Image 1 (cartoon, rainbow, N blue to C red):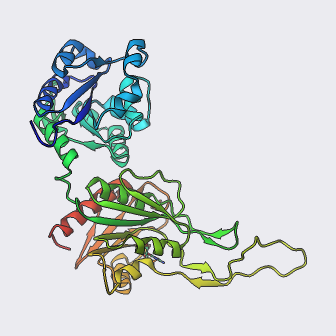
Image 2: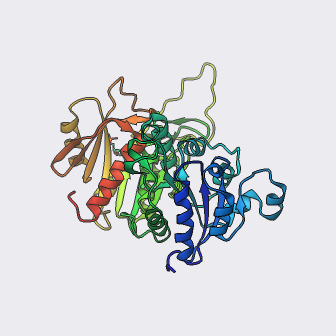
Image 3: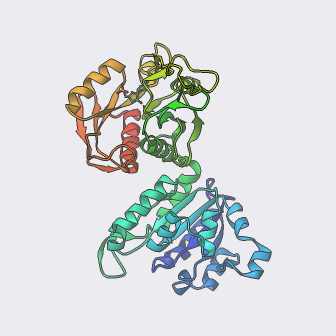
Length: 407
Ligand code: C5P
């Protein structure tokens, strides 16, 4: 018995890979520790292990068909994922990962995965070249952004005779990842309170018009998701965006810079703040209470601007209750280091992520980002990467700093 797993209900999805034989041992290991294991065996999975073995080891019926009348009568496909505390996909083949990333639901396994709001852990297993293929890596990044956690794959000899990453993690490694999922103890940002600002702000001209900018919120949202994945209690204060909510973060939606500052202050005390929002520098001082009318022959309305609060500077310069680590962005087109240093001094923050927004980089609204981190005296050039990868790297860097590493 294990205190962490005792009484936990795990829905194990066995997809069609040679590593499916290890999932039989996984079922045993989980049951030894007091977990209840219910299994979905995909059609391809049943080519590798038999429903009878799975059923004998799990001590339960094995589910396989989405349109099985008897299965649906006994246990609907929605109920299957509702009844579980955790969904585990092992082996997670390239194919099932692609279908999960695309949100497809044409069989029982993918339907249960799409219909769930429970955590999902996947143990990938595939040929090394399938693993390295950009399509698989793209799906992986998407699934990580969706909050799916991964264990493995490991490097080693493969059943296909090749060597490299792609071997499914061993059953006991998967058990350890499942235990960590339940107690969260291994997560480096466990117990840390984080806040991320993201997106543009909208500054009202009148009840129907506003001033805004082209920020998509992609980078800020990805950072909030990455911090949450590492266990941080994460608040995402976001201006209006079309980005999906990152899994695991609490979202506070705001419109204006002043609302954003108020929401940030309401979230204090905090350990770490990342200001990724493109806050409008100005608001309209003479915001009209009624819609401005177009009137022939009358003079055009004129807007008077007032300066918005600087959220990054305000949080950085708090006398009382300043977060331990405050991080800002600097969008630059030239003299990156010089400008980043000047901005850090002006705002009073600890780190600056300088991103290159020169024409042709496609940073604004794009999916990739080239950043340089100014932390302490070091200025690190990070390779151009997807905004999710940049977010992951930043989250790990934050964890290292807060856990006693260099700042
Ligand atoms: O001054 P500038 O807009 O270039 O600074 C960018 C950094 O400051 C970003 O981290 C942005 O989120 C933050 N910022 C802010 N509030 C403002 C303006 C910028 O938090 N009003």
